[in-house]
Length: 252
Image (cartoon, rainbow, N blue to C red):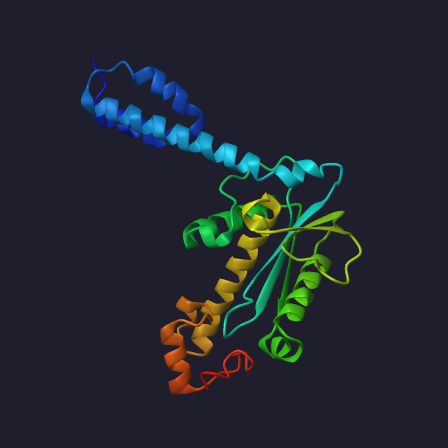
């Protein structure tokens, strides 16, 4: 008895990526248009997966290049540009055999994907450290120095001491271990990409909480950046305690 197309569709929906080749070989000779469409869909899914495998493998370039180091740590920050809120840095050491896919510069990922990957990173990482610096400190010592402090805090917060730091573009003063600054590193190294995601999700969640404490500025949506509605709120309401005074002097 010929299998119903709806049952075949359900089989495809339930199939893991590893089961797709079997699905394709089982149904690709079926002449029904509906089944051919399902087989084509399975082939596209498999092709997308293989492309992602290749992209992720390319992003392991630095981790492979320095594979003699036991604990390679990626570091990145989020929040250098906003008018409000802290700067947040993350340090992440991934396992040598890390099989996580879709790691990328956090800005290239949807919020949903970042949240999914954040949970997986926290589950699978050898160690994760997070560092913060407040708007007051940013105003006091400038954003670059405040970022360096947050990065050092993130590194010191790791439960193991890293042998090598892969940094997104900067060399962090005040740390003894070897550092490799990589321009656009969050799109070139899985370790830095993981740190980018952890820092972004951590800061975004914090800004959503601040939105409840300081309503009217739209922190949940703009995350403290200078969106037009945020600037209008600044002009109308004035500043709140998490605004960076040195960043908003043109608006208030």
